[in-house]
Image (cartoon, rainbow, N blue to C red; front, side, top):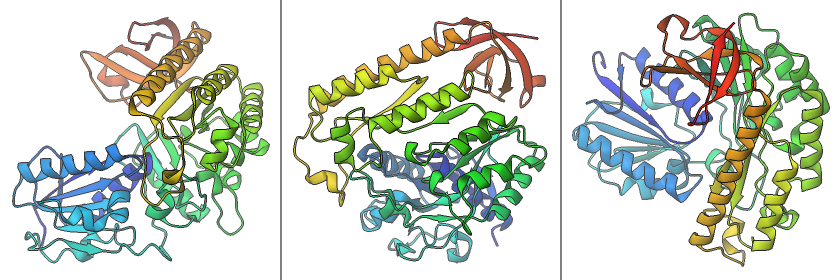
Length: 430
């Protein structure tokens, strides 16, 4: 029915979304669709949305307009977190034909009766209770794959809409995750990034996240695993030891901080204080040599005075962090934080973001300098930019060298010898 029909995809947001988009694209390919780039003419466009910030919602609307302009008669389907949270709002955007919530995100082949435009946009699967678990992993990038292990979240952080968009915490079985890892390896992919909404809460048949990574460590053919963002209160000594002793799990953690002020952490309803965070960072740094540790920070949360923000700056300077991801607080409907006093102006948020990004650059420079002249293994990507190619060391240092097609998607031993003006490191092959 859909032979030679073209489907295009656009993904907004997190690694989890990319794993799910890739899975949906494989579903449609099995029905005869030809997968094409989003900027090409297509018969069907699927937009997988994010809704972490108001800017993510604006981006979604922009992408929908772009699809409509490219192919006015194409069927446009919107799914993802924004679709789950604001389905009726999306149906009012000109050109949208179907809005799919979490319950029908992976049901597109069964919902497509034809590719004709709808007279009125349809909404499917936006019930948030009793959601099923759907496995997903990406195969779009030949270098690495995002492997979903868990979905949903039972946490109640006061600023976050994810529990409303993805439902309660639920986890895949270890057997299925291992089977998916083997499928990924069979495609020649070297690196697997373990992802989910709150991966540290992984729980299936009383098996924990640590049980899972021990089993994944046994999968033959996998060269590298990376653990995506994991909450500090869920990191255990045993988990750290698995990474330390593994030849496959990379010495790289991304651990959300959000604020270095205990007052603000309390308002955010985070499940830790700065003392615990400091202990986790120090423990990891002590046990794992040359480890790379990144952190998320939110600026401008209600009640964040200059004094509280300076506590964040001072606290981060105490930590062995290698980089920061900085976000400005964005008000989200139905969250507790929207009713908090002490709103921070847009101008102040912008200034604080700039300060933290400068600090991040300094942290990264310090980390890179510490690793100068060191010997590492780099997984090179298949991307040619102005005659240069790029890759990452085990501990997430970004390296560039002259493009050579023969070493794409391969791991090479290098010595890091210089930090360039663009902040990347150059290397000699050894």
